[in-house]
Image (tube, rainbow, N blue to C red; front, side):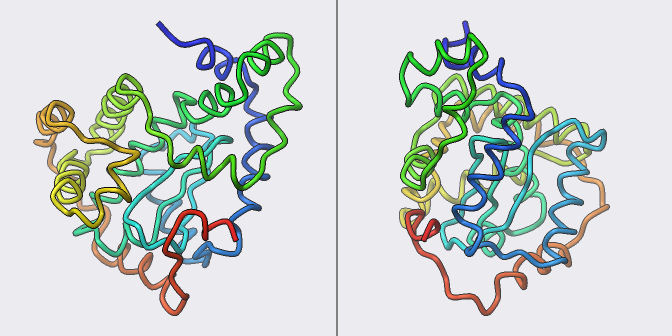
Length: 244
């Protein structure tokens, strides 16, 4: 059964989420790796997963060294420099992106934002007062990025991500490989698995879906394009510095 905050999040109009996305984006804009090429590649990856354009997600590449991806209140998805640098192929980036798109579709982070403001916010939303959502600050967003999603939310996101990947003819093997590498890499464990705890059960379910033969539509050149987009920029090492 959905929590009160999840039910409240599902009532928020997409127009409000888009306004919220514009505010959260402004908090880290100086630390993006925005180039025409990065926009093009991320747009192509998003289109492959969502050819009908039903998602309200906005995908951005940020100059953060930790191999990670985050979904934000408002529907934004941040793909980090560390993720594209460590990924072995485009399938890994596509898999992690699919997982975060699932969190956006389920409005998990928006629900966490609502829950963080306690029941008064839930009551306000039930009567159509969305003004409280449109006041955000860096600390609130940083706290949301450090939160663990619930086990149920992660399991649900895994299943949705697997569906998106299968429809796009992309194997879940890339997502599995990324999770497994970061489970074994102690240095990255806090960076990624603190917010994405990939348990053995979750990995087992994803491996079942890994037999799909990936379409050759995308190649290594796309991954290299994303890597070049951050080249020459001084690395941001922590989430808190991302918002400075």
